[in-house]
Image (cartoon, rainbow, N blue to C red):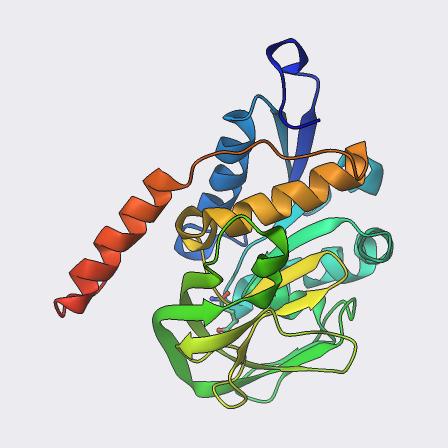
Length: 265
Ligand code: GLN
């Protein structure tokens, strides 16, 4: 199958779980969900978006992609019990089974072993991926550029650049079972020291980049859509071509604006 034919429109469906949209939604993190929906629907794929918050049931069979946004330490503390103790075993199982996850900043930190606040308080996290985070006084707040080799495998473009915006005081350190998502070209990334950004474990993608991440990086959006739909419909499923012209144009305009010494709007 090379594309979704007219008579197949509506045959394919993508089910997105937006976890804690009411509590983990810093810097427009919902923009990432909107990008997934938009690039799926433009291809004739039906999308079902389900918010799942504290007290709601999470059943891994109901979803193809789970999205977790960022939150401040206070919100991370609010969701901790529900996320780690109630939903934790099911979330962990779905990760081991290859479910696609995109986790941003606070959500990324919550998937790891622990998050130590800058006053020394330790928040035990899920431990689904082998990372831990230590908060420091100085925050990293800036636009970022990364180089992500895994995008080469998609073969849609020579460009392996990813563009983002980070705002975090946590420094994240990766254990041996987790790969960094990308190399830092501009910005701090995971910890401002080792030159890497984010984490990949199975089909879990974690990054410090907030809500403009997928809107600025349609190839990353398509990478996640492809993984999720192949997992659901089989390896033969091919994501139909969809131009990235609009997103590329917007990103180029923004970069030009910044080169003139402006801060990104
Ligand atoms: N509490 C975290 C930090 O500052 C997460 C903040 C965020 O999600 N932007 O490191």
